[in-house]
Amino acid sequence: METSDREIIRRVLGGEHERFHELVQRHAGPLWGTLTASLADREEAREILQETWVRAFEGLSSLRDPDRLRSWLVSIALNLVRQLGRRPRLASLDGGGEGPGGEPLPAPEPADGPEERETLAAVRAEMERLPRRQREVLDLRLNHELSHREIAHALGITEESSRANAYQALRRLRQRFADQP
Amino acid sequence: MSTHATPDLDPACRRLRGRLALLLDGGLSPVEAARDEGHLEACAGCRAEREAWERTTALAAEALGGAAGELAWALSGLDGRLEDAFAARRRSRLRRLAGGAVASAATAAAALLALFVLRFGGLSLDEHSALARLSPLPTLDLRLPDWASLLGGTPLGEGDR
Image 1 (tube, rainbow over the protein chains, first blue to last red):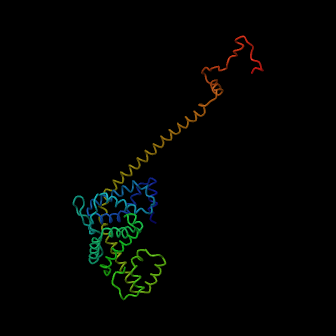
Image 2: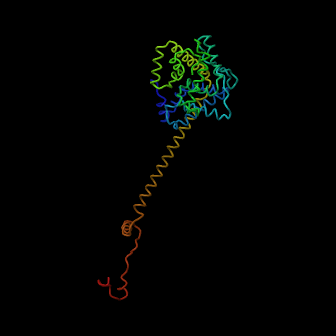
Image 3: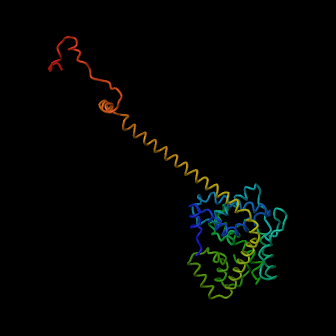
């Protein structure tokens, strides 16, 4: 059975620092998805991802409810994005950007077949056209599986607004893609 | 909140489709959800509509997870930064422990001093004399002389006292 976040956090705070890597392994993926959806510059997204984890370790004892680790991490990351001093540019969801030395970054995991890849590319393109808030909410809901209460807390909006944004985003995608296999 | 113009829909179907997104998002009360699930079991058209929403949600989730291929690159170097943070935490913990030990020693010393003062700082004259008898230092004789007998008078009688 997978050790719960709560248990890992308890052990890390008890001095087993190495176990913090388990939390990174578990939550870094969705966090990276959020950052790359918010920032066009992959190097900035990478720096913020790493800074988020360092700050999370340093502030772990201040996390009041360990069951809300994911939303706490998202809050740290989004605060860091805001601290960049400018509004995040919406990034391409296609990935394939460039690393710090100009080297090409790995492409996203390939979908099963060409038709599915095409559909996914079209969905990503449509999502890039969504208003920023709708896209943020959808990411936190589907990628991080946060509740609307947690999303509201992370983004500083109401639960109703979170629900409405998710609904609007999905409705737009549904109108466009529901008939895809 | 229906997504398509559905003028010829049954009112029950229209109501359900209006809140299908909410149902799938877990936003309905258990009673409302159970009622809608009952309708879905009986209505093929609404079931198809639900499947369309589910497909959309799955597609969106897959699209959002598309950046995962870069994750290894994004995390490279993090281990070193975390090791630094771990080491800093260990040092801080050691400092706290050392500080705690010094503070404990200081507290113990202060407590001993306080005990000493309490024990010997407020002694009565007799207690000081008793203590002095135990010590090698010379002691003061604090008894008053009988001035009357020294001056040739009679000592104070019982009645004069």
